[in-house]
Image 1 (cartoon, rainbow, N blue to C red):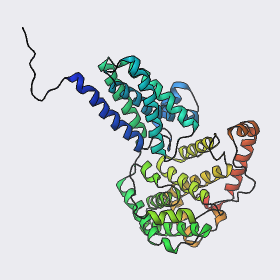
Image 2: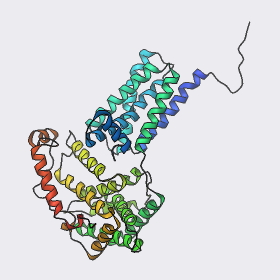
Image 3: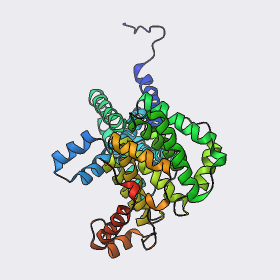
Image 4: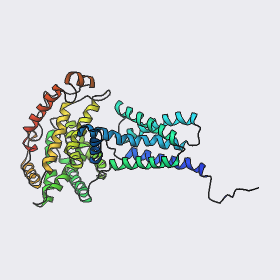
Length: 394
């Protein structure tokens, strides 16, 4: 009788496999929780251009689909890995467990990543992609080679699509600018005056570091620092290089005290959009702003706001002027040093609709591209054209 030989230190591979998949599932879950997904910046150029060539959509439509596709790929991988974790469980039990479990993990990962419970549209995306991934995993879980290729491909595409970063020099310059501003935080007045004072301090620091020659990178550093302090701390994480400014109480106070047109939410919109313009470009920054407003228009959101949209556009234009070329960057530094009024970088907000539900946005304004929407967008452009600081000098 032939007896099997058991070597010390080697267990049954079929028993080890579920544990290995469980570890990989945990790792991937943590990736989805803490790695900035394509949502903040939109999909990268390679994905957008590929979608445009494949489907023939406009750039905005291709970016939206590519962004959803990248995020969906990451979520779907949860279902595949969970189905492999339950490899030794019989299908009648494994199938419902994988479907429910992957959906819950997807929603929880979004909740942690975004910092708020996902809205209905995001929950729907999580459920659909998790179910698709689960079904693929359940169908292919006996084909090790097919699954390995699929997992590597999915993870690679997702991580490639989310990669965004800033250089070491820009990272250090932004951090130094932020620390300089926060060291003087107690002297910053409240309201619109505080916004102007921080703007002046940041660009005075940028001017000192320009040495009369290279002005673009110091301006980028100033905008990224203000994007973290007055906009959203996670802007630094989106860049793939957390600035790690250890002055969180001071940041929180400034975040609450400083405003544009007596509204601190507009200051946040302005600087987040400005920072995203530095990280991702003008068109992608605006797409993010529009997407955010559309999400706000869904149930549970604050409603579509043309005022917020104007703040997004103002921040984008400001960052573009600050970094378009060296002459424009230098001119902006000089203008800010001489002192600027609110109206030079942000127009009046009276008369622009806010708090619009999704149904009202479609029915009364015609949605994106609707006649009434276009009329208001033209009004926003006209108001922004009156802001002298948002016009570059070439």
